[in-house]
Length: 436
Ligand code: COI
Image (cartoon, rainbow, N blue to C red; front, side, top):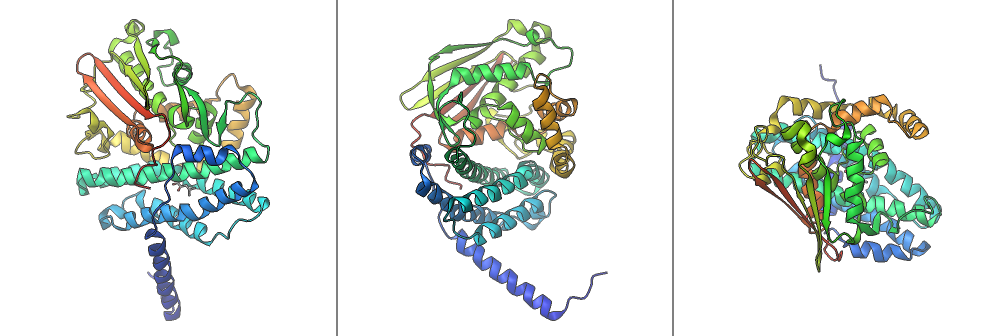
């Protein structure tokens, strides 16, 4: 039975709601101050105290604007969607973050910046399950939303989330290097989270190595039964980019997995798909069907083509009418979205946050000590998440690729294989996606 609420308390809560919504409107009416990759590098290159404080206050005032835009978006959804499992959780997380940022006082000193970085870091962790929650909620909502509406909503949510995390993580990284922490002598040149001389060839080789050592494959599969990855083209190509958007950093991703963040990045994801498709099609003969990666250093863009002979995209599992449907979150375009196994896997990833969090330190500690072998529970987690059940790796890769103006296209040679074309602007002059 519902408890009686004292009339004055009810009045107070209505007034509070009204006030909070007015605040939301105020922030949502502001335009985001979008940045380019180049601006992020230039500003951070010669960091000093004044710039660091400016950067902190930019993050402090910019993030609530971007969150307000998405809260408005969530409010505009039909009621049947808002009440789906997962969506309400994301809405609450965003309201809470919005309120905290809005009230955060201006940052003036380095000590205040340090406290601010801690505050932002806590929020980054708290938001670890946003993607699986959203993905679950919107999959369940798929029958209630036209595919275009669903896909454009998801795109705005995800682009905006990437943008907020880029700004937050970049500021934290700048603060750490300014204070002298996180200074490993053998580190590659970088400004904040942007690596200024990223070699595509090295990224492909690194992903190849990690994929062979990752328990995505049946236990008894010898690594050399997997197809070889061959690289040709302009092997010297390097450019400035956010490495984490392209590559899979094992320690980072391991920690992320333990915190239930789904961190799969473009090149790792694409190579994984090619290796898996080729392996499944040819089993032990797979090693004779290499995957060819071609790198082209264009005037304005870096282009990467990944060609495999894994049979193409119109396999029994992928009942899509065109390759780009694989990027869709709607069951109308991609029937796997409502598969029970996928929903179940998403549910367990979305909900297990608290249970896993308690074991994180212990797991990371033992993994770091041993370093040669991943502890068994981690293997289980990695294995579970690397299975194609959750199915957001490809749409996420698409969003990452297009975030700074790149493109990602799939061409299926049905019955033969798939060619994937990834184009990334290399001058860093494109603004972040407009949906922030
Ligand atoms: C997110 O991860 O969704 C965020 O908005 C992170 C931000 C609050 C720091």
